[in-house]
Image 1: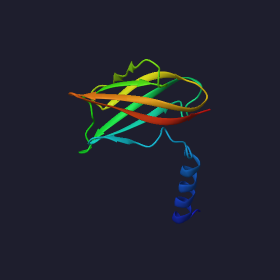
Image 2: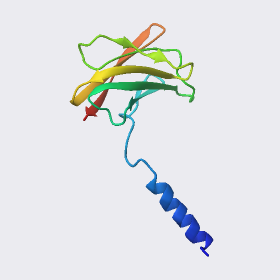
Image 3: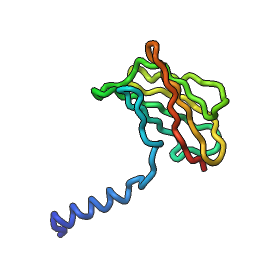
Length: 125
């Protein structure tokens, strides 16, 4: 019969084997005032063609930044495309086409009379 310690060790090995490894959903977060903004791509990692982007805003107190207007574009000269807010969760979604190589996803944020543009670099395979 397997000892409790051996059983726990086996369980940890099995859980580690099921992990996704080093896949990261997106580039590091950035700040806009007291709001932390990060993006995630679907699929992970981003691929040539259409990719869905989630822009996630979190206030300093940990609450969702649900009161923003969020627009995205994949090129400095592309048209802005408004993201759709996912309830009042601080999550905004939009699909954008990407080419191969180094790309920048531009995220334009507006709230009240303030606005900002954040740049998130990506490597597209």
